[in-house]
Image 1 (cartoon, rainbow, N blue to C red):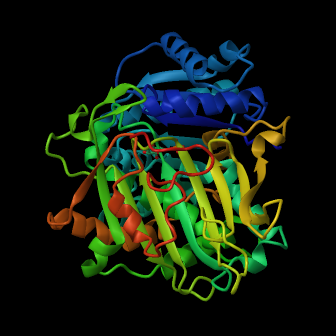
Image 2: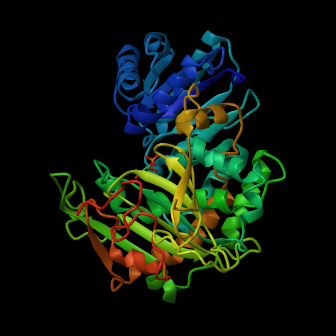
Image 3: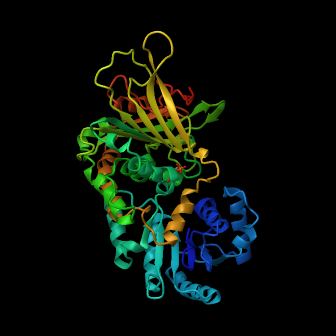
Length: 506
Ligand code: BG6
């Protein structure tokens, strides 16, 4: 793998949680693999005054606590590449020090103007920072490339995302803006493309003729932790569905791209989003279910409900669970229902895309009960990354009884291969100018456009229930009703315990 061009990596929000937990550990992983540039530096910024040395100690502590690298022997050398300046991004004048700070690092290292700005700050600062960088000439590529990485939330609905987009594009080019969706950096998400497009056995079946329905579940066992203030204004739909779950849908449903270049891949994902059948306001209650976790005992420990969490309104109706049924109106997927759901405080952490294939037209065998004869291909995104194929086999002995068996591949079988962290892959790509695994503005806007009717209806119509579900269960039972066929349910529910031991707590 090639080393990126020499550059300076600037972090706004250098002392924040994201920097410590994700950005710094990802940079360390690149460092130990020798995948950072020959000459580079990290310039972290933050509101508080901290010396370079004190900041470098924080970097060491972050690597120590959050890096998955076994080799921690190079922490000191790594931390030495960090510099810190105090820069409060809410104060306009604060930005004027930046060109000088960058220029002095550049002349010290003897590098050009290549600069990557990571916006690890609250979203209300995005336009402010981008404007002030531009005012100080730091969007100008005459002396080297300039790129920005922006975290979600990218707007909070279609209108605000459009406004944010227009504002950023006033001074920056689309190819300079890297909108991160860390799910796209996950190895198993990228593997969806390889599974689909490099295997003759799957691709011919991957359409309305053979697929009965598709399920995507992203479950978390944790609650909102310390992020109550952010989550109150977001909810599961904005936090997980608008970005991660729709991105996964894009990968599962897209047409084969003409090449692996960024534009063809992003074009195909965009086409999927543009083909999502719009959800009508009057249908929202039927096809979109929201829920909120309530206090319960989980594995012997009392888990408080969402409304009891810090910085959460005790009468909050923010959803911590969302499930949707929708269709993709194109030739490949016409008539195939897609079910997606996500929730916090579910029994376990698991993200999967499941393709349910249609049953054979007729069978004389006594059918196995657990899946009604639907073969399933399960793409396990996390944890225990892998692919599982479930199909019927004859139970040995008299008669013709059929039971599901598993053909199971685990990523851990690639014994010597370490699965890179999502941020590691994404930062490396951005440093190399590859935006394939970042979302383009039209994709983001199409995703918002699709969800807007649900967002607005949930906000405006308080008669639509927010179903409570006890922590440690698979969300509100109402979500089971989205799947209307009697013999089918979500792969994991409290009613239908899955055969691999993931169960309902209560
Ligand atoms: C983030 C959400 O984008 O993704 C969090 O803001 C969520 O609420 C997280 O917990 C889940 O990511 P992962 O990689 O742990 O599935």
